[in-house]
Structure formats: C-alpha cells, structure tokens
Image (cartoon, rainbow, N blue to C red):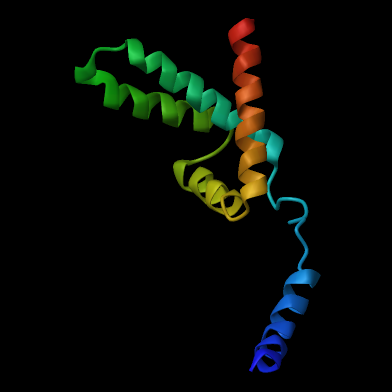
Length: 108
C-alpha cells in the first residue's frame, strides 16, 4: 500500500520540483504604474481634509485628474492592475516602489 501511494505521489513531486518560482518580467511598466499609484495615494490623502459631504465627489475628481496626467483612463488603469495582481511578486514590487515614492515626496 505504501509503495502504491509513493508511486502516485512521485509524478506530483517531480512536477513541483521542476516549477519555476521566478515569474519573469512583468508585462507592464512597473515603474510607471508605481508612480500612478503613489500619486493616487497622495491625492486621496488630500481629500481627508475635505468635509465628508463632498469627499467622495472630490476623490473621484482627483482620481480622474491623476489618471489623466499619466495618460490613463479608469478602465486602462484597472486593466493594468488586474494584470499585475496575477503575480504576487509583481504587485509587491509595485506597491513597495509606490511607498518609496510617497516617502520621498513627503520629505520634499
């Protein structure tokens, strides 16, 4: 019985040992996407100072403005994020870089 289980598990073990852990380069520009996300986060932080009654509409205005500055639409931005979210390493890189950019801008 143990030999049968081992023979059944052997192909699975071989398949996982051959799997590549490196996802390769992302199909989108990570640097540009990080800059967009950093600018969106900064714009959102500005809206925390706005009264609640108009906050949602102002967030939408800032969001659209930042995307337009970077030559993106909401749909194209969402598509880029969808692609990057498929691989944890890519999304981690994007948000880590965005955090670094925000920190630098806050110092300036």
